[in-house]
Amino acid sequence: MIDISKLIQGKNLTELDIQLLNYIIENMDHVLQQGVRHIAKVNYTSPATIIRLSKKLGYTGFVDMYYHLLPLIKEVEGKQTGVVEDFPEINTQEFFEYNTMETIELFINRVMKLEQTYIFLYATGFSAIAAEYLYKKLLVLGKKTILASGMDSIGVFENNLDNIGALVVISKSGETQQVIDKLVVAKEHHIFTVSFTKEIGNRIAGISDLNFKIIDNNKLDDRNMLPNIFFPRLLMTFELIIKEYLKPNIR
Image 1 (tube, one colour):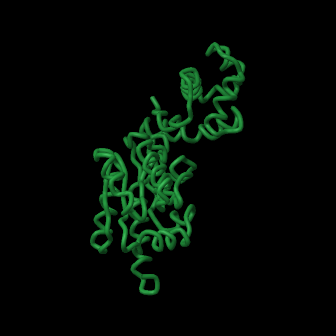
Image 2 (image 1 turned 90 degrees about the horizontal axis):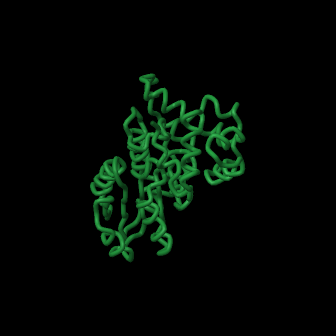
Image 3 (image 1 turned 60 degrees about the horizontal axis):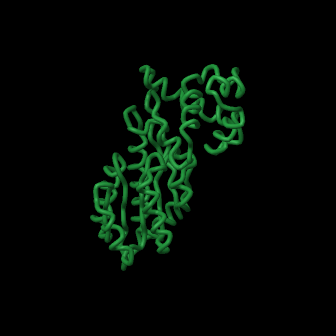
């Protein structure tokens, strides 16, 4: 079974929408040939409902949804059946496929150079482990930093709003609701926001003032069960930022 929770999060889908999406995913090899009328018939609904579903998910129509979902589904199916590709080498060229040096420089100027206010780091799950790494790196660089995760009270964040100069969040999926809630509050208080997410479009990237896009090889693996080097790439991104920050002409 493929976990679709992050695929549908924030999309306001009905139970019927979820049933249709599961049907499409489970029959990916045939649904394009079957067409929307057949899919609607076997699910006791109308073709218009399927078209509305595709638009709720951000696609222009059924065919557009199919061709965007197909590679994601096949990738997960391949990994689940034991067909695992060799890990690609981690290098800076990958980073600059989706990010620029200007992105790093903006992070340095708006986050690393804060003096009177705090950098607030927030993440949950596996992302919280990476956030702790960045937290410790910032501490040894003498940066005033607060780290919080989903296990901490919301008061840790809200009670420090007046002293926060930048909110930095990490979310592999880019759809974690707890993270989104923090970003919304930060925006309301005019706090500069930064996010590290997967490289394709997501809500957290859209809300943030600055977004770092990290390649995610298993975009539908919400539980992080399959081999993936998203987090090694993420740590490399941290090191790239710090390397640039420590250059004499920048610092």
